[in-house]
Length: 201
Image (cartoon, rainbow, N blue to C red; front, side):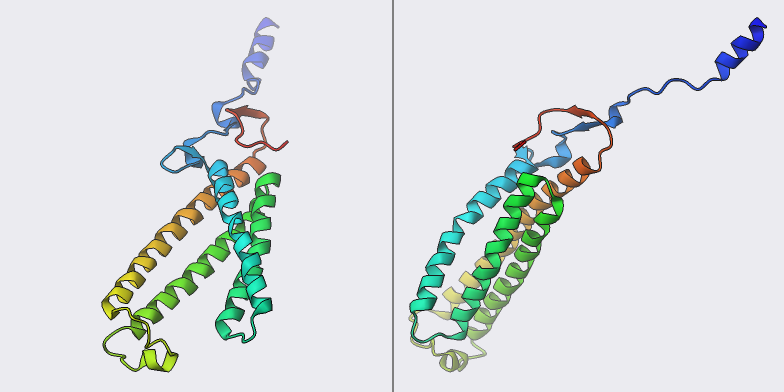
């Protein structure tokens, strides 16, 4: 009888134990940005705050558009650009406050579209100021600009490098924050390691 109880105890499954993999680490290195200097959520909030300053420029553009007598296609393009930017910035703030990763996606899409349009305009500028198209400036009415072709082409190339570099950097920061919210939302355990950055609860 003793042997039967011993055999039954030996065959029983061991009690569940909490493993380190079941604990969520807020300060995991995969959620760090800026060469590991700060958390992705902090970096995303800094990005949101710095981007919100441009909303004041939106008000300035809107005032100029309303007071403008002759409205060209570029004026309409600027207004459309800033009208879209306003809800995108709000979604970014709400996503950071509510920890909703999906509200971060409009900002990423906006950055991609903005970079594509900016690079396209810069390439058009290079084409206009290239020696192969001497009549392009006359058709656009910018032949009176007292700037050499080499300077304009060089500035356009530097702008393309700047735009692509900073866009990729901002997208990477927001994507890391997106991944952090996604992992935090799908974490089924109750054990957490480290302090949650910028907790609004």
